[in-house]
Image 1 (cartoon, rainbow, N blue to C red):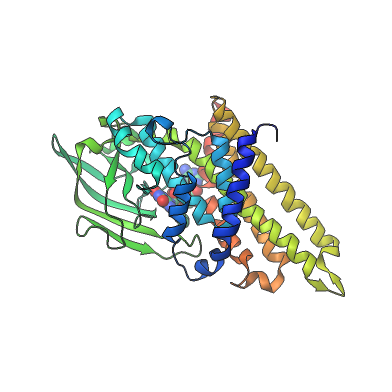
Image 2: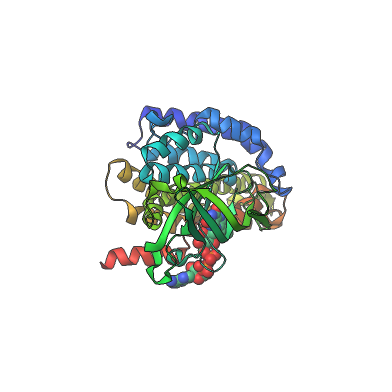
Length: 387
Ligand SMILES: Cc1cc2nc3c(=O)[nH]c(=O)nc-3n(C[C@H](O)[C@H](O)[C@H](O)COP(=O)(O)OP(=O)(O)OC[C@H]3O[C@@H](n4cnc5c(N)ncnc54)[C@H](O)[C@@H]3O)c2cc1C
């Protein structure tokens, strides 16, 4: 691809080496144990600069472009989706503070995020408000000039236990008819740990079929006090707009995560089809299997190119919401198809926990649900087309 520089290629080689040597060898066993990503890996990711990529140099970051983020995400997610997904939280928190924060807030949090010393979680979804972001209810009440008090529930908050900070979307205007105009974004600081901060902040794990390596939680906020200085931008009512502004980057990165998982499934399927023999020959000799591989590879490449294109447009400073949405929508379908076909090519072994394709399949299913469901994504794309 001509859109990549020599620096991009070096970054890809280095990340692939890290992913293949450090992440991939331990991913399958830890996944099946439902263990979390070892802190040592997160520490090494910090050393490699992965959390600093999208943060400008003046705030301790590396100031790299979206194509670089996509490359790293693809390679890490190919080894283990959850490892590529730790970066998502950094991108969201960093993006929110960078785009909407005051100078003091940027200087306060961005260097820590870039160094991997402040690990973030993103707390937006609520039990009764998922796709309907504008309807969120978690309440932030101003106690005095210095403090807000948070009350309500969030759910599906991934990595909340290990995070040092959470970006929390909360309602500062009690008038529900104000919808998105009544929402504000806060940075909630916390100690990492499964115990959370009872009774002000309680967390309960949600068991899942996949995406192991990170845990997701239902969170209860009970009179949790947050300094007024932690309101991003120090202005109420901007939270929804701040969130929408980072979704573009987040969707491109999520599409890249899907490409990584799908590429892993494709490579596993190619390898297996050449090793497995039936009727006296490798199953790769059968046309039915060959066609499967051809369709899988074509779809992975189409998803990859859509993702690169969206990232490149954004790097050129062009509007990329449509392209980011299309990349996310397409790649979510693509990864579900490709991982399912990879299981099929493995026959019964594809259903065994021992084989990584069983992991890719379970991980591949989540893409149509998180970071905006496919139905919502399609609705947003259609709205743009028809406007
Ligand atoms: C593994 C995992 C990790 C997650 N991590 C996080 C996280 O870290 N932070 C966070 O905030 N959230 C997280 N989420 C939550 C995720 O973003 C939501 O699940 C998602 O936004 C959908 O919301 P919902 O589950 O409430 O579904 P709902 O909004 O209730 O949707 C249910 C179904 O109805 C459809 N639907 C809803 N409205 C419409 C409409 N207007 N038109 C057509 N169809 C519609 C949806 O597409 C879906 O098919 C995570 C979810 C999962 C599964």
